[in-house]
Image (cartoon, rainbow over all chains, first blue to last red; front, side, top):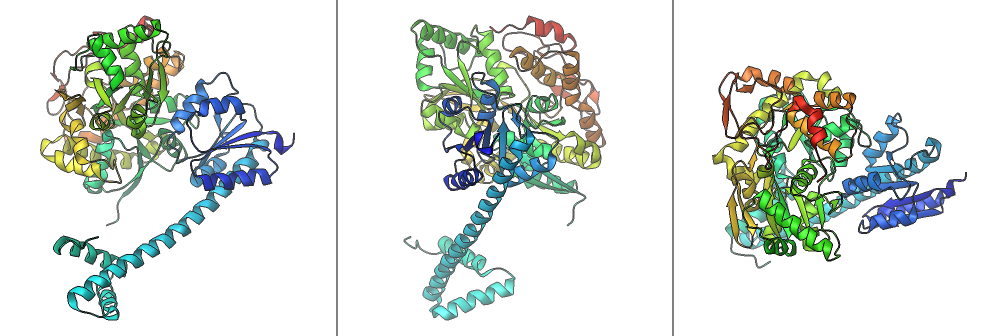
Length: 200
Length: 408
């Protein structure tokens, strides 16, 4: 049977990640791919779609609900097993590490599922890398904001120029072997506790 | 300081993870030479998976969960043992304001009495059935949970068939109060602070509590991967001693404010400290201004709360059989019997010279009042352990108990 004949359901509250997975599955020739972001009404959707494989992210707090439903649902094909073969420990570990899990209807051959799972794992990992880079950029921006506020406090309370305020922060950070952003945060916190309301 | 043992533990954001959290955060683990790393999880399925593949050595688990894992009832099941219990009691049954009004019309009083509340709820359920209305929908946290079994036990003893007369669904604990407020469910059984959360929001009423359905009954446990426990006996014993000291600290009244503040942190529950207090004091707001104090509402330490009684595991086993999750066979029974490990608890704590029960199991429901018992070392008091309907569970007479269980 061709790859495209399997029906795959992707449950992921993260729309961006879900679309990345969906694109990967379609690129691999899977034509019957459904993506669900919200588990409300999921039982009816599963009955309609009758998926052979369900791919779900591990962060989803509804996994317990879904597993219970898989066990109780008699009307549809039962996706009872997680992954295909319990002996494939490396594959299971890679999936959990990547933060993804798959439920598969009974009787499907490992060779047919493995490429789907491998694809999901690599796309989850790629998404995590992207998210990590975004997070780093975001925290860099946050750091810059708090340093600016700390500079402002020093300029106002000690009559320093902007350069002198920054130099003082940097010197303090070096002396204490801490990051400038940490020193800036301490100063902002202390100023909030000691001084009059800043009128934020 | 480098530690002799590195242990990674998973937990769910529930108040009864307190002993594990305190062990890591209040220095009890470090004092036993353990670098204890905690990782918060979003589902019991994740905890089970991460135990199975070795991400976690131990975890905060629902009492029946290690049984389900060892019996192969779940995907990715692995042999899991229970060397320590994280406490007794702690759950409530909460219903929507509309259901409470209906129960009150059938004579329910805001007194948490299981028999009274159950009779009123039963009358409401029958009234709705006659009127052709949809069955009430109750939520529990997991099919293999004390919540599921105590809710069913309570309803069945009150003449309600939980498999036919109501619908039971699974909802994650932190979502319970919202699901109730949104009308997606009519009631639920969950641990704190997720009952008090509904009361604080004005969207529910607590109608009864685990501590009255089955007094001093088991709830969460420490589940350990059997292969890890066997390979690292010293690490496990050190962990059990750390947990023992942490549990004593959690039980001590003077530490309540500190414990509530600790659990309120975003890394743990992320809910206001005030919301943790009902679990600690047993003084519950029931909704509508009613208040009740429940004796032994949640015990993290007292009354041998940390001892992994085999009779607790075996009662869970009988309920798995009762509700069709498992067949009663000699092989399954043997697996259930071997899952809880009082021998490991005793061996780890013996050097501390603390009171230890001499037996591995007890007849549940036999103790009517708090009772000092013979134990190794210092004296030990066991709490009353009765079921609200007066039934007795004798772990030596399992066949008869299972045969006598009815669905209603």
